[in-house]
Length: 172
Image (cartoon, rainbow, N blue to C red; front, side, top):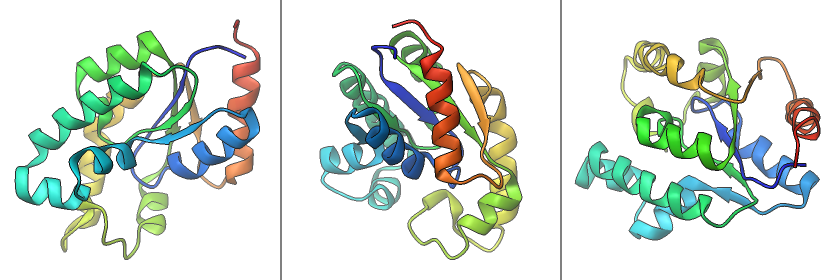
């Protein structure tokens, strides 16, 4: 097994947190939910950061927290869906960790997040159109990963097993 953090990227609803927790259990590595680190650092919810300070402030905080977490070494890190937007984040993740992208279809995202109230970018009457546009915009950045796994129709355990097979094939 490699000695670098495993960084899970993907659109909201792709399963990053669920898969991350399971992968951490299976590897014995710590699990880090980057959104939880951001909330703890800011002392307020992500919704509150977006509402009170705006997305640019959130993204800067997200980048700073990412670097802090990566500096701690071996861990399974579930990132927020937009972390890949910043080129700096993509470079830091590629340099310091193993980037695993969890791909998901628009249909699955809409199904998994139906009724979600804690997703600032998934609010409003045109949520489906907004989600489709965001997914299309981010696709090129999600593609920059060491491995991409299609999560559609797969259990958390199946996705975790795919990641473990990939990791076992890497040099320490």
